[in-house]
Image (tube, rainbow, N blue to C red; front, side):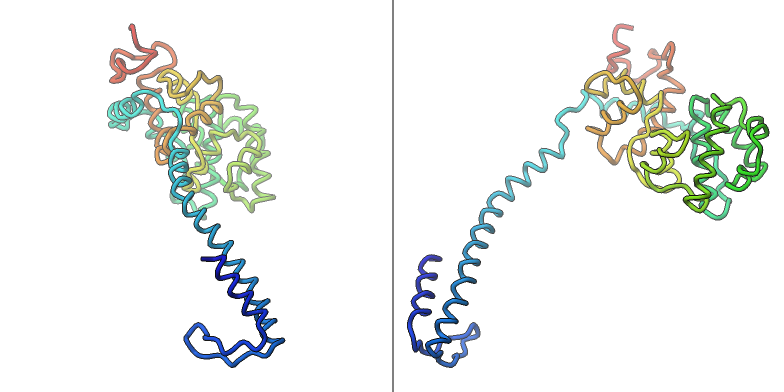
Length: 306
């Protein structure tokens, strides 16, 4: 049909003195003179050829669209998922329903001053609490934050505090001497480059001294309300490996984060940190885990045989 249409147009183009033709609305057009008919023929031929190609592309696209759509769905579904992970997760939720672990009262979302104004002060306090929390129990971090807030915890107040006083205020958090240096350096950068606020991207956050990936993802979630990735600390790293939630054993929290993000549904990314951290603080302890009291004892590879 397309080829016939092309031949017909060519014939019109070559026939001088072609009579009046119908316009799209049915209205008769004036007869074309010989030169005009040839020009009209040349104009008509090219669009018809383009329409022919467009039609072929459209049909091919429509025919493959369904196949591509099905393929896209298959790609969205992870190629691997750990066995019984949903049952394990539900059991952890049940064991954590009391919300009585240290992280539930003393985590980063509880250490900043909610009445602080402007909002950038709250975000700065969130970031500072995360920097202090590395290799430190939540109770110790919360105590240090209370002492800092009592003096007015802002970018300006920290820059005006000498290193010795700052060290006294945050002691005994882990690696407190290094954290004094990191806090001062990061705070100066925030004042100079971000107007006293904190960056709103993981890439910029991890570029700050003393800020790692776990802190950055938690800062994005708590300070900015954005889920940028799974925050993996030592608790999440340990439990994910014990439950075999990684296809292969991982050697670092960052490696565990990448492994989890490959299959764990994104809607669970925000929940998983607090859920597993509290579970690790109360039941799945680093040493002598309380497997006898764990609802996942029969489902956990690490607990079988105990």
